[in-house]
Length: 193
Image (cartoon, rainbow, N blue to C red):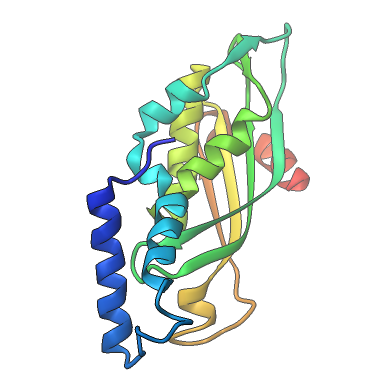
């Protein structure tokens, strides 16, 4: 795990303190005094993925095994995740990420897929880019173009501010290779989701 430098942790803490003061909060209040440092530690954790490229994530979680002959679709569904919107730094939550691929001579350890999802989500993101990043990493690891990622989730920038529509969900689909070309294959995966 790569951590933020002490200098950057102090910058975040000071920036949070400035924001709290601008909002009218008494940062000397014992209940708020440690909030800037707590927020800096939280940011270090929830934005860890920003310190890794997609290639580095692929290298870290690229443990593969030989695929059985005539392997068909492999799907991991119902991966719970969250991220933060790069437009408002608002929480994107109640995410369900579903991933499928067609093996090309190798398969990935199943636990690696949720780890990839988690690391990609630990960035300032767009939901559409999350799917694209996950697909790219899996294609790199598995040497296949046959990957599909379906994500459904809620965005605080839509549910708690602005238009304020609680319960509104956004669904994105990233389809590559045979999933883009073959409607029945796509339909089979969507039925699993």
